[in-house]
Image (cartoon, rainbow, N blue to C red):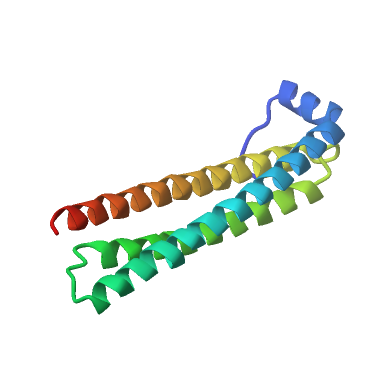
Length: 146
């Protein structure tokens, strides 16, 4: 594996292995709950707001501006968010199977990889919020033009 593990970190990982794993498991449960809640909200935004609004605008032969492209971008980013979360969760599962007392270096490297994957999930979350805000702004522009 690639990361060099300093002696002090090795000692901490070995000495607090069970505690570290318990905390990671708690984080995994909390993240799963958050992922489910966010997933529902994002799905509602996509289906109940964006898709319905775009359909209504099309039925009324109204200009949709950039709403269609924005909704498609939101849908694509939501798919990516789900995929990134699955990758993150799989990495956490792998992390929890490593015996950190016997192989602290592998444990630490996998921990760092899971942190990177969690950051990617967070970045997708931020981008989803940004896209939803852009959709809202475009919608307000269209409504203001009528």
